[in-house]
Length: 279
Image 1 (cartoon, rainbow, N blue to C red):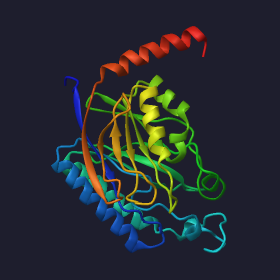
Image 2 (cartoon, rainbow, N blue to C red):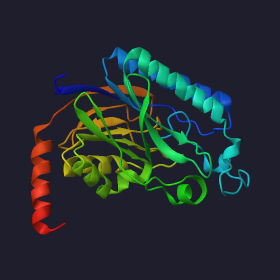
Image 3 (cartoon, one colour):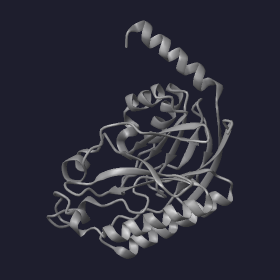
Image 4 (cartoon, rainbow, N blue to C red):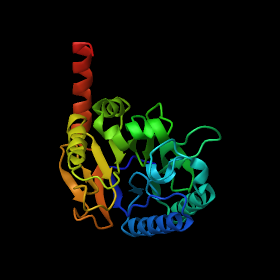
């Protein structure tokens, strides 16, 4: 099959839920995401990208083993794991039914130890074909909640290669340089905050990573009017080509991603220059 030159891409700005011990919240989160997947497929998207903790972004206080008044090690036995897995399974089935790729962040349970804060890549056949685990982790996440990931992850769709970044990864340019060296056409960044305002700089960080690596960047954030962010797609020149409402209302936006001439030209220039200066 010949390589496609354009990929229709959807990024979602969805509601945020924080209690993985509440089965009804998990079911509501899954139902909302499936509705957005249907909307993305109806708009002709081949891939749909969701924010960090799309079904549920666990609160450090709800999960604290010391109770909600004191942050401590998370007690993950309280989470409704079977309900979460059921919602993920339904998303996988819908991806296969609609023939659409889905990138959905979620907590990934391990047989032993703390879970990972992860991103699942679900193919248009409804199979999980890749998983990325957040590497950077905030102080709270690494101290009380999650196991850090160790490696980059890329996946290919219709001739396009994407890297994955989660949470505070967006603050570390070296991770995006790594994806540049792995031949990524773009990086899917999923980022969330919990009732924290003044995070407009995250969008600046994402645009800077796009320009520095002449790559597409998809930024998926929650529907939150207080954090000053909106989901959207940035082109290799750092310009928004699609953006959800900044007022924090839930939405799905669609963009046409294509093989941008500056991506390969810039990558070859960066490779030659790094070889010359010995970095």
